[in-house]
Every structure is written in C-alpha cells, then in structure tokens.
Amino acid sequence: MRTNFVLIDYENVHLEALTGLDAEHFKILLFVGANQTKLPFELAAAVQKLGNRAEYVKISGNGSNALDFHIAFYVGQLAAQDPKAYYHIISKDKGFDPLIQHLRSRKISIARSSSIADIPLLKASNAKTATEKLDVIVANLKQRKTGKPRTIKTLSSTINSLFQKQLADEELASLLAEMQGKGWIIFNENKVSYALA
Image (tube, rainbow, N blue to C red; front, side, top):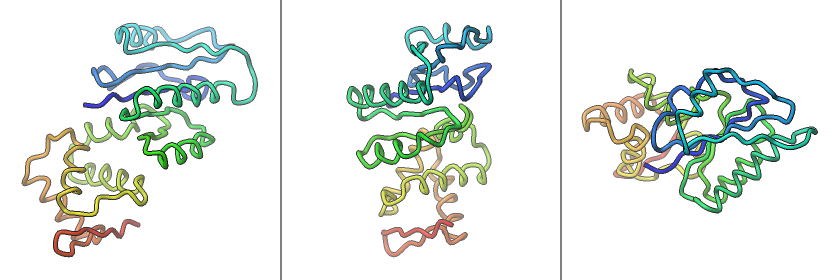
C-alpha cells in the first residue's frame, strides 16, 4: 500500500489520540505552534509509539497563518520526494483548499479533513454497511471531479482499491447495482457516466 502522510494542524485541531493511524502505511507530522507548550499525555504516547513514522514539527515564530505556511512547505517538499504518496491535511482551515486543488491538478493525491476519523482511507476501512460503503464511494468519486473512472472495469478496480481489495465479487457487484439503481451511475456497454448530486 502506498504511503499516506498525515499533516496535522494542532493549532486548529486538538487531538487526544491518533486513532486508526497505527499502520505501516501512515506517516504522521504533528505541527505545533510556537506558543503551544503542552500536549495531552495520550497524544504524546501515541506519537512515541509510532517511532520513526511520526514526528513533531514545532514552528518558529508567530504570525497569521505561520503554521499553515509550514504545512504547505512540507507538503511540497514531501510531494517532490514521493509523488505517488497520498497526503492528508488535518485542519478545519479552508484556506488549504486552493492549494489542494492546485496539487490535484498536478496529479498529487491530497485531501483536507477536519478530523482523523474523516480521512477517506479510514472511513473506508470503518465502513461496515452497504450504505456506509456507498457514502465512501460517492465521496471519493465527487472528489475526483473530471478524473472519474470511465469504464466498468476501472470503476470496479477503483472501488475495490478504496476498500483495500477486501470486497468479495458479489459485494462489489451489489454496490455497483445499487449505485445504478439510484441513478448515480449509468452503464452504456462497458462505459460509465455519472449523475452524482
């Protein structure tokens, strides 16, 4: 599985733990403001447990958006080193969204989530019911804008990858049939078109 870098804006999103990120494919950078002097014990212990897969980045200096600029710098630096990785910015700050759109136009896989639980990969792995899985699929397809899969085979592969290739053929076929039944996807021979509201 490709590396997933999680860049956390701790000035903006206060966490108590790193639930769900204790897997080899996650690397965490926890950005801490210049004036932030305390972290909860549980969070510090979770970062320590991850060893070299997690690090603190204490920014220097204060100023409007100082921490955000640090995150933007690190995303750029990491994306140059590993363009195939997936980047997750954890922040409620919508100011990251233009940067994210630009990076996506450059074929960098990146998303902003307001909490760790909202990371698409974690949402997919936590989805148990068909409805939850459909929510994950539709959110992923909407995020792709013009880069949606154009054939049934590619769409099937994309959906299966979302769920770490753990879907049985019958379950995948059922999800596709439900999406088609709801009018979200339209099949024309082996081509797919979309009507996602």
